[in-house]
Image (cartoon, rainbow, N blue to C red; front, side, top):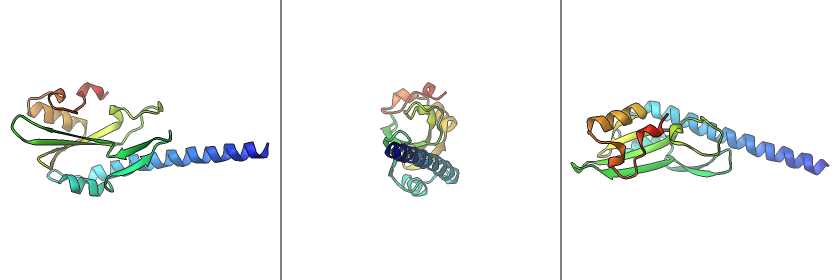
Length: 143
């Protein structure tokens, strides 16, 4: 009986520490995104977010920070990179959904926008839809 209580306490401790880990990551990402300025390079953005790291989620999954990165070349030859950072926990479904990520859009290795509004504005200004370039999620995925 004592072993079961110790085991349950240990499992609870692991769950609590994992929740704290992803909570800290979301907070760290939000604080870093506030410091990002237009014109910064990808390396400067990654330096603010402590570089590319792997973090445990509260569900025991490992994921990258930034969560993922998409790259594409526009028709005019400009290279578009979008870094997707985990910043919001909207559901406890064990998955990280698009609406829990914040995009940082770079064109030719310079930040041109941060956040979903900037992402949409970028698409509008370039007269493209996100589907026009490989790897970019649909805007309507963001609710």
